[in-house]
Length: 329
Image 1 (cartoon, rainbow, N blue to C red):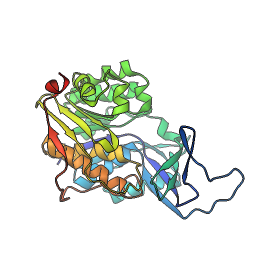
Image 2 (spheres, rainbow, N blue to C red; image 1 turned 120 degrees about the vertical axis):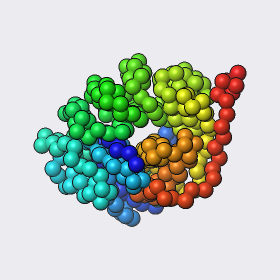
Image 3 (cartoon, helix red, strand yellow; image 1 turned 30 degrees about the vertical axis):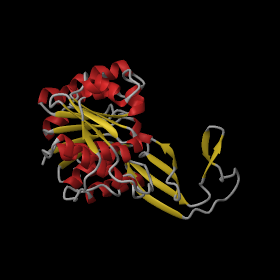
């Protein structure tokens, strides 16, 4: 097993779950939760409290797999922060490097979830989870991690660069899952890729960084920046390339199931891949575990409720090795 540091947000989620009042309604090309009227009182079927955010979702994946897991995040000393600390204790995640704020609240999101369709809208109050420049790279000297897993730091590329440079000097490997704020600076983001061992994006995100209309084209260009690249495409599966091993795969979804909640699906895929890969599993087997982990998460309500353990008995799925250069010809 490996020692993995997860850096990213930790948020309390409050789910408002209903089977009819939150039913999506289409207006033109947009879909809205159309049955909630201004000034009305709506009876909700169920209320659920949970935790999530890119940092904690990923940390839970690593811990459940059996890795020694450390989370670096920001919370406040409030009820939401207490809920996050209890979750870290339950999952046996090291919270020694969690920072506390007295100026802002812990990030909190209200999730409006239609229990019939699985569609949801999130009302996010990010609070202290917008801030990451208080993190100290010297903490890595104390931790001595094998891997650094970095999700969005809300566009703070200076802090991201500092941790990447420190990890590079230490010989710590890096997996990076940038978010929307980072993708607003494509040139700066691409300059960071020289430090990255594994990059994961979805198709829309990849299209913001490099040219390409197809997954194969996007992978070809991104593999020039990072040795391992994974591009997901929702229900269409995705594509992944390992430049050094000269392995490229197309993969489908693990199972065609009823989706109950898509919150945390991307985090489950990325962290599921690293959980298996850092344990010495092959590139192919790590992709299968990633897909299974993501499928398990969307089958339950909550951003990390369904996360798998390392002893899961996985069944075969559609995954095909191919030659990327030949595919592009």
